[in-house]
Amino acid sequence: MKLVLAIINHDDANTVTQALTKSGFSSTKLATTGGFLMAGNVTILIGVDEEKVQTVIDIIKEHSHSRKQMIPTTTEMSYGYYPSMPVEVVVGGATIFVVDIERFERV
Image 1 (cartoon, rainbow, N blue to C red):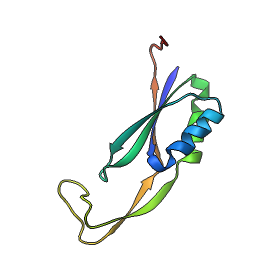
Image 2 (cartoon, one colour):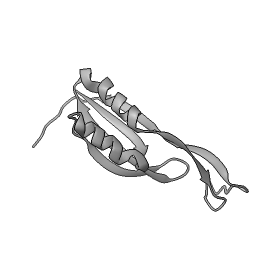
Image 3 (cartoon, helix red, strand yellow):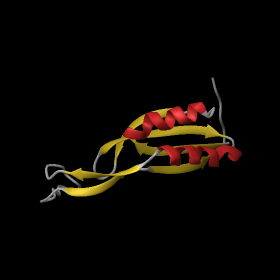
């Protein structure tokens, strides 16, 4: 068994989880914050058999989209740095990890 962890933009979270559910996959959704923008993300955990990992990844890719966003000068980018002019950055998409599960129990 494998654990697929997908960190996605909160804007795509409902679409991704609905597509996973429609395809018969159970998932757990955790609200997370990260990246230099400290933006809202969602971490989705999906336990699947090894042969279904690519199907889960394909669903996540299909429903997680990168987009450009303007960051205002009042936003701290990192380490106390504030840009002097608005900056366009790419947000969204997905970061996916696949981890071996040594043991799994439902109690």
